[in-house]
Structures are given as structure tokens and as C-alpha cells.
Length: 140
Image (cartoon, rainbow, N blue to C red; front, side, top):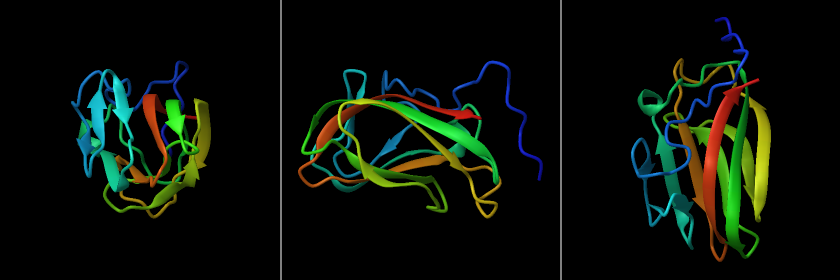
């Protein structure tokens, strides 16, 4: 399989990465979208997913990406989560806690993921909280 060409102007592959509403996202176990933010308040084993069908463009195997996001109002070290594929739960970015700030993380999808992959954020917060916003996923 040939990786997609990187466009001259990168396109955010995530739909509604600004969390203007709950459209395009599936939320579990207490995660909410309010006021234009993904609210990650004291949730344990919660998932936020964007299926491939809801994305502007789904992820494909053996391809380089950058995921970016902003965190604000963090407590206890900030939201703790990992980034995976939506259906197969393949880890793309290891679990970490994120305090207030802007983050950009590079990763490469393994050659073994599904041909058209969505995005999953798996939260493991105990006393960590925070707001996420401006999630983007671009080819690099």
C-alpha cells in the first residue's frame, strides 16, 4: 500500500476538533463536550472516539502523522490518556499526562492497522482533570 501524499497545505483529518458540539464524536463514562471543550473531569477508563466514517480522512497503515491538541484548566498533572486506532485499539501514542499547554506529537501507524482507521483517546484519569480543544491530525 502506498502512503498518501502530503498536501501542500495540511488538512486536519479530524471533524469538529474544536468541539463546537458533540457531532462526529462518541463519548463514554462521564466525558462531556461543553462550551467548546472536551471535558476530562475525573473519569476512569473513558473513551472518546471518532470513527473513520466521521473523519475528514481516515488514517491508513504505515503512514506518518502529527496529532496536536491544547490542554487548559488542568489539575493533578492534567488529563492522562493514550491515542489508539478506533476499531482495533492499536496504540499510536503511549499513555501520558498533559498539563496546560499546546502539544504536537509525531507517530507512524503500524502496517497492521485496519485499512481505514478512526481515532480513539482512552482516558485513565483518577485525580487528573482538564479541558482538551483544537485536536488536529495531519499527514507529515
